[in-house]
Image (cartoon, rainbow, N blue to C red; front, side, top):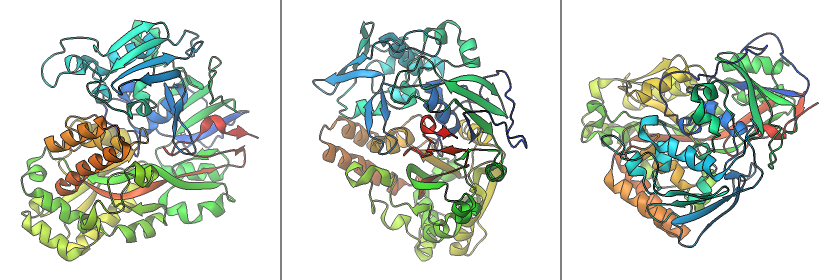
Length: 540
């Protein structure tokens, strides 16, 4: 999803328009408040509807204001029951879900079985234009509420049934033994009645059932969250709240961190990574996360999607010296990619050190040969677009282009900065990109399925390349239905090999999650999704 992640969303910035907080992004004022954590942030692209948010800034907030049926352990990403009392099945296709009694939303209303069923039906319905709709695609009746063509013939999915106030059943279109472990993704979050009775008001101040609730948001400045008094789960906040401060320049954020104007910064500029640990007197953590970075091609453009162009795309991949770039630019906080997943999955979970093979290895001679065989780079030149506001993308995009140009002996590649992340994502989701663009992916749930199906499945929620391969879709379907984990992973990897052949996107490197903090706070860590574990942070 989200984040480094992919984000597939509609135009428009988030619609929350609440009372402005005292502190704006990059402000010289500390904005310090007793017990409140001040943290780096960027404006979300869209309103904070769970099924319409799959980018990192919105995801960071959803992670704090919603509690799903399952959540993930911040240390090892293992799924555990949260809002669910139990999830059972006798055939791995029909599941009975019991919601814990006594749960409430931040407005004091109860969390019930209908809170989930109504939310999922809303997320799936085509006319609601929710970008994560395809996450409900394996529930029976999805094709009626979200047909490939034409209008819906139903408004609710036949596979969802409310049994009683705290029980509902889910019937999938086929067996999917690992499906319950995907239910920690925020697209599956419950929604209160107010979401449906006064949608506009809910968008102005979202109501969730998680450890925090939103009390104010001023676009381009900050969002204030405080502990949800009705929350009774395992993630009860150890602080008095979180002030998310909006920054459009990560260098400004880092300067504020050093000056005591910011407490938590999880967007350290690449140029500061070599000395951040010394700068912050050891208050810095850098650990592997479920994130990868890639260059994606707009296959809807005839120039890049034409037959034979897969060789050109493979050739460009082989012209990139990943080892040198990750060492020089990122000081070892990135690892050259060898597949389309992440090392956090482990080999048993589907991570592979060799599935990409030679296509992900630097070989200038072979790169030239493949590009020539494929008909050459369209027009002899291309750009790589990236958002210029966060992520130190300019440095690595320039380095990638230099590597490609040096390998090919031409000036074929040039970076193309786009002002903000929201602008950048809007160009992608509106299919306005005519050349390659950077594409990061931050896992939604710790399964190999999440690194493949949402990105490359035909019509999937984050399929920014517009890639479509029926053989890939078939293998993914078979992998989901296979109850034996080892056999299932093998099928997923067969599908992944098709990506290596077709190269709709070039895997670059795996990313660590890095976070630094001020001496005002303690107990700062990041989870495997690279989000700070805000509820655990204490303020001195």
